[in-house]
Image (cartoon, rainbow, N blue to C red; front, side, top):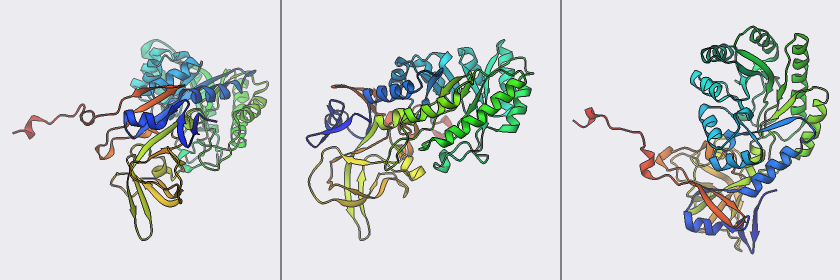
Length: 419
């Protein structure tokens, strides 16, 4: 459920007409519902009541400081994959003891930064990273708490680009190699083994792949304990899907019930890394129709949002529902919704049946709260759009629209080009 709804044929976010925000800030812009974020987090987190757990929001899904602050106020931790995400999480007030650091290419300076901040755990992705982390901890005179991210070779039945638990994926270490790496880690002076990590993919709409992964992780945990390597945390990652179109993902209660049943008797804290399931349907992208071009084979509706603002349709061929901000009567049309970017791949929807539109009409691209702004860019020298958050009857700009001057920040013309 979310808090975007129609009242007298006009789309509202909570108690604020979306059109009112568009009139004040211009388009395009991202719009988030405070109540939806809160509700989604609480529903997910409370589903695991009775099981020792920690819910760490996946910062890569939506890294806006206000969104992160909201999660922090609800008691959530953070899953980060870069030094920049760690910086954002801490700036938003996250407790470093509730932060896990994932990612295949952590640089030494990032490892040292996280060690100085005292994060809960590093999810190690390779043997070489393990050695680099031991050396970094040694230089700082501390120990690095680690889990090894294992690759359980499970098909999550999702898009290949967001599948992360197969042998052909770059993520994690195969189970047998992971066992050897744990044995080596036990010998390292500046490594403290505390967990096992696993993440099989994103936008997964079935529970069985998660259960299968957890069972394999449990087997590894029991094997490690036989070798006096005591595991306190099982990090199962995130990946629970949402409804974009016709998907019917399980409710977090069903998901939690199956996982908690599997965790019975393991005596570990379960770490979850939800992202999309918290933020996805809590946000929309609002855009204005610029032109309508009717060809012999296609009708194109050109809007002011583009692939640089929301790349998921172009990158994954993913479906994003598109709705009018103000519903109007008339015959529906079939059109491609495209942006101003000079690429044929710049589209938000193809062959989509939509209500009749005309220039200056407002459209809402739904389910854009996750992997929307965080994946945006300045391609074609387009300033990135603002982000807005609504709470009840008020709204606030939580990121300002970039200006042309912002596009050139840090750039310099060398003197030899001025002679």
